[in-house]
Length: 431
Image 1 (tube, rainbow, N blue to C red):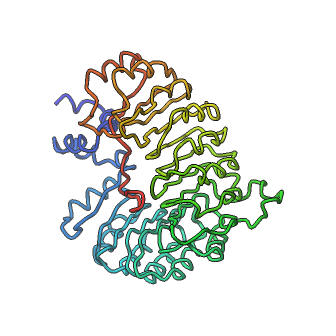
Image 2 (cartoon, rainbow, N blue to C red; image 1 turned 60 degrees about the vertical axis):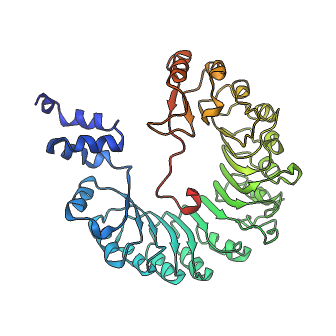
C-alpha cells in the first residue's frame, strides 16, 4: 500500500490530532498502524481507568507497557491486583485509587513505585493503614485525601507531616475543621507547599482570625510582606461565611490563585467576606467562585492584576459586570456561568467590559443569533467554549456556528465541549 511509503514520523504527527476513539479505530486497521498508535509519544498525557483488573489478559498489560502510561485510576483493587499494576507499570507517576470496597492494606504495594509523584486517595476505610503507606512515599509532590472513613486524624496528620517534598495538598477529610495548632504544625513541616485545598465544614462556628497565618507573623509586622509566606494557591470547598473572618486572607498577601466553592447560594451581600479578602490580595491573578453571594457583593473589590475570572452559579445583577470591568478591564479568560432563572444573562455587556478577552466560556443559551454582533467586537478573542456541549453533540445549530465563523473570519475557535472531567481528581472535584 502507498500509505506505507510515508515515514513513520509523519503518521505519528497525524495521529496526535486524533481523538482517543479515533486512534483506536485506526489501530484496528492493521499491525503497522497498531504499532504506531501504541507508541508512547501518543499516550504521555493519557489516563487509564482500571476496573475489574482480574479480567485483563497478558496482551492488555503488554499494550500498556508499550504506551508507557504514567497515570492510572484504580477502582477497588485487591492486594494481588495492586501488585500486578506496580509490577507491570513501575514508572507510574500518578495514581488515583478508590478503596471503597476493599482493604486499605493494598496501599503498601505503592511503595515500589519510585517515580510516583501524585497520589489521590478516594474513600479509604482505615486511616492507620493509609498513614503507614504514606510514610513509605517520601517522594510525593501532590497528595489528595478524600473521604477517609473510621479515621483517626492524628494518624494521617503525622504521616502527611513527613512528606516534606509536597508542593500540593488536598485535604478533604473529617467532620470538623483541623484545630489551628494541629493545622499550623502540619504546614510548618511542609516547606515546599504552594497549593492548599481544604474542605470547610459549616456549623462549627468561626475559626480564629489567624487560622491561615502560616508564618505566624503579626498583621502589622513588616515581615508579612517579605514574599516568603508560602502559599500561592488556595482552594476552599464547602465554604460558607462566617467560617473565616474578613481578615483571614490578609496573612496570605502573595496569593496568586483563589478558589471558593460555597455550599449554596447566599442572599445577603453584607455578610460577604470575600470582598474584604480580595482587597488584601494585590498579587491575585486567578479567581474562581462557585455559588455564594451575588456578584455585586465583590465585583468592585477585584484585584487589579486579575487575568482569569470564573463565575459559576451565583446571581449576577444589572451593572455588576460593568463594576467589575472598571476594576479589572484586562481580564483575558472568563467563565461566565451564573444562575439564570427566566432573566437576562448580560452576556452582551462583556465586549465593552472586557475588551482584551481571549477565552470565553458560556452555556449555549447565552449565544443566540442576536448575540453574534457582540462576538465580532471582541477582536482579541480566540476561543469560545460552550459549557453544555460535547464532541458530537452541540446545542447550537450548525447555521449559527457558520455565521459565527464568518463574522469572526474564522479567528475564534469554537470548542464544543464543556469542562473536561478529570478522572484522576478526588471526589470533591468531580461532584
